[in-house]
Amino acid sequence: MKAAVLVFPGINRERDMARTLRLTSGREPAMVWHADTELPPGTDLVVIPGGFSYGDYLRCGAIAARAPIMDAVRAYADKGGLVLAVCNGFQIACEAGMLPGVLMRNSRLKFICRDIFLKVERSDTPFTRGYNAGQVIRVPTAHGEGNYAADAETIARLEGEGRVIFRYVAPDGSRNAAYNVNGSTNSIAGIINERGNVLGLMPHPENHVEAAIGPTDGRGLFAGLVDHLAKAA
Amino acid sequence: MKARVTVTLKSGILDPQGKAIEGALRSLGLSGVSSVRQGKVFDIEIEGGDRARAEALLKQAADKLLANTVIENYRVDVLG
Image 1 (cartoon, chains in turn orange, cyan):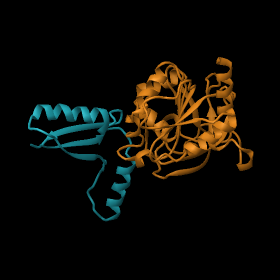
Image 2 (image 1 turned 120 degrees about the vertical axis):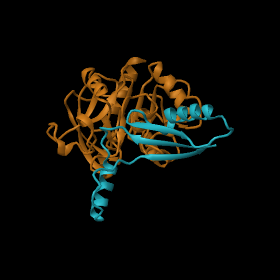
Image 3 (image 1 turned 135 degrees about the vertical axis):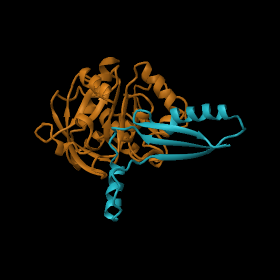
Image 4 (image 1 turned 30 degrees about the vertical axis):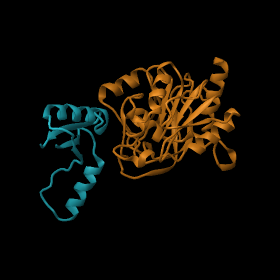
């Protein structure tokens, strides 16, 4: 897996992400600066990591979404290239028009920094083939603006087309307002684009991959991607 | 030329920040406030004196960056 991790000023999760990519794929990812205009040749996964690009000025992800490298990322995605957008990366992907909707301030106004439970809705995507459909995973989350919102028509389309990939749930997998930590519409934690090659999610699977520091439920996402790319090659 | 772009949340979009401000106004004892919605104001200086051009430019700026039209409306005022 030849991964490229985008680096914007104010991003702070890029090294966690790079470490996880190295651990799970055995290969060092390329770090790509926001002012670059090209991705490294042969890139087969672009990762937009978490953090606080541009200090969340204007709106979370709004400035980064207009950075020079994003034209290359959009062109790459248009050709079917895989893009994984985590946390601030999800906000950037929405602002860049690569995913529908918007991440708004958490409904309870608090920054949430703790483990949460996610239901994996589908296992037949390049990002989730390491899981079973319906599986509940425990991963950390850390955000103040993760409250997913879109107009009713967009939500109906996402649901109808099976494009909601992760949902905030109770440990037993049931949907419950108390576990919808940020107030997202339909408990949406992660969605995929129409073509199925761009995934955005708020929680951080890259932080739960090593037994030495806790659960390893995030590993399935990266192992699945490695597997997918090995089979595609 | 001076201009102002005002960005506001569309109606029906939950505004937890506005709600918190509303609550704070009530706890200050300022009665009669029934609702608060928070928005943004951009004061922008435009080169040249062509009003129509300035309006078109600011509309582009708002569509492309200043507002997220999924959840926000905007208004452009060229103040002269």
